[in-house]
Length: 432
Image (tube, rainbow, N blue to C red):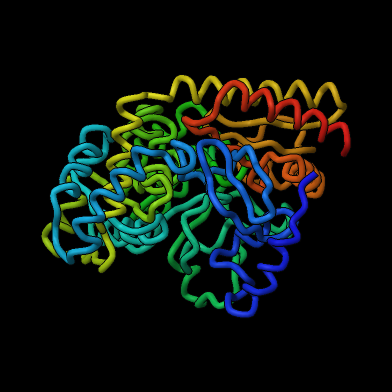
């Protein structure tokens, strides 16, 4: 059983100089508190108390190749010896963009950024300029970053508070939002194409873009219903609206071409981040030329001193090179499905109402929802307290999972890792 005395002392020290002791809000919610880590290798991560964890968080998703992949670290080190940041262009940046243009259906042109939140706002700016309209349509439970105009729709006092499906209520995720931020968007429940079509028909003159996670990874790991993504594509074509896929999580995790390639639906603009950089701070706004030409012409300004630094570009290029050469996707999907099925069996054997839902490379475990979830409102039925006990039990036994029940599979995970996770989960389920 793991103990966390050194992490606890370091957290007390950190709170004297870091707000809350952390540099990202989500880190507060580890078990039993924010943990301090020393190193990671492959599918394992280690903390200051000497605890070893089989890691299914993958640092909230970016580490698709596992921790400290040697080819990524080697290319970053070698390219960084030439310089860190030029405030100018360099050859690897072109090579990365050329590779992404080959792999991603919507990537006729692109710009590199630092994170998903920034890239999402760039996409909104392009869509407004392209259409001459102001609002974007988004969906309950989808996460598009932490900035003001998307800090809604991801929290609620309860399922009933959301109100009518056709005109949902929204609640701020944080204090400090300007009143005007709610005027930027229209929100609807996800996976209801008939409802989307009605609203777009009625309000088409207001709406510049529809933005969606192709899979609702952040809440429930819910796949789109058959025809939903194509329905969005058809509606956007019909009404001259920009279709944006937020592939921060699905990009390079569902395949080399992202979810858009997996599902065969090509958006106008897409956001890639997380897995593309193996833990280095890089994202990309990619899109069709008709949209990205507004950036190329300088009509839409996109800038950033730290964009496309040598280390971040090298990390992304190395990551995509490894993924392209090794093609770990079939194995990742298979390992994920084996883990999902094993968890379902373990829950049944131990008498727990657990739902395991997802696609394999990422999936969610939840309790008490009574079956497969199809939108955010379904996820609100879950027994969060019981999930908390399950995740805490796993953590104390050396299995690290994201607190909301989200599991990620990397190319570094093995059959033995899956077997260990299942045997541990079975024991934890017996104890809760």
